[in-house]
Length: 581
Image (cartoon, rainbow, N blue to C red; front, top):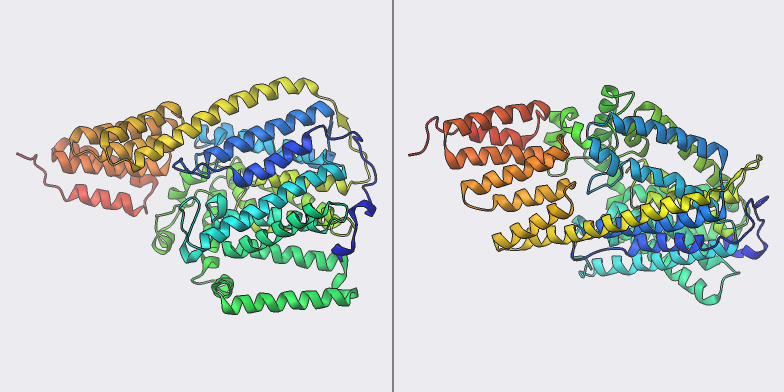
């Protein structure tokens, strides 16, 4: 079993292309791991957004600076796939339905082309962590992260959520503010924390930290009630058992497996987790039904945009055009999907069929290395393989995440370093890239600081009861982040609270400012239609009624099944045709 293995005596990779110490790279990656978990801003409107994005970006820049300073080992096959995928996504970005968001991402997802570029770079950074000492730094950071996930989830279930967020069915969202994200994070960190606990070359204190982290990640995985993550974890465990042959040859392993199965069954019967798991198989009314319906809409979108897709972050723009009345009737519009809930389909929607095929090839290559890694006697390698398998599986029920996919590709890089192919990979010296990376880091720090301040201003604007103070805060947000569609949406919502007709005009102007940045954004378009209807109601003037009716008809042509726009049009049609006295 894995706990009988010793990292110090484990079989090392066949060679190490860069035999020097990582020169601080491992500390940057460790900071990335831990920062991804703990970077939140309770003072922001979206406490899990801007601060985490800033920390991830800056630690990524530090890691890349350390990487290019020491030399970059370039695995041929995966690097070529990445170059091809980024090329296809670049074309899709140029032709995107929402050009600005395709480059920088939306405030919610932040997965524009600029973020995609960091994934292969982090893969190369992980590939450079070839030493046991470097791996231990990453494993220790993961162990600390696992403890945070466990403690945070416990606080939520006990009714004391640190960020004040509550989720249906008493699910835990952890520091990510989303149960699905929490489950995905547990799949990445959980196996690494277990490897840290089982590493006999590690100090006893850190082994105990690893054990606590493993327990925390396991608890958080259960508390998230994320079935996609449960499926990923189960597939990874089965893969370990099959590849290592433990269940066939070890009586002890069989006893442990049986005990774990019994405990899982008991927990399922005695808690809501069992009903949650069983509902996965309800293909008519459960989550499975919604996933099938989402995939159906995604496939329809791909059929309409097969070559270049709709660009990164463009799905939310075309979804109202592609969705049918049956979907809207079944699931409403309170949460309109902005991503296809399948990793490969999501990339295909964004970049076209070629992008989807290239991404599938990348995942397949990563899974091949993971399968190879499960056979080794190194606990860290086995853990990396399990984490990659589990995460890739769950991603086919979610989508690539700007918060967690950076960690995925770091782990894939570490895995590739431990399961090398027969061909020697070249080493590229590129110290000249340090200066551009410093410039990018400086710009990202300034941009991130403005993003955090704008997010805090938006929260004050949304929660302040005094209208004039709220308007000033909203203006601050749009000044700090004029490119943010969320800032303009909040500013318009604040202006709408005023009772005067001029307040509606101000709100309409704010919405138009947002639409100038993102003409097809569905939330802004719906708000625009509702504001026009509100203006017609308040003024009662024939010209306003006619203008509102004409604009709502145009908006409905692009979103024919949106009940909010339909309601606004009904309201306008019911108004008298003469002005108010």
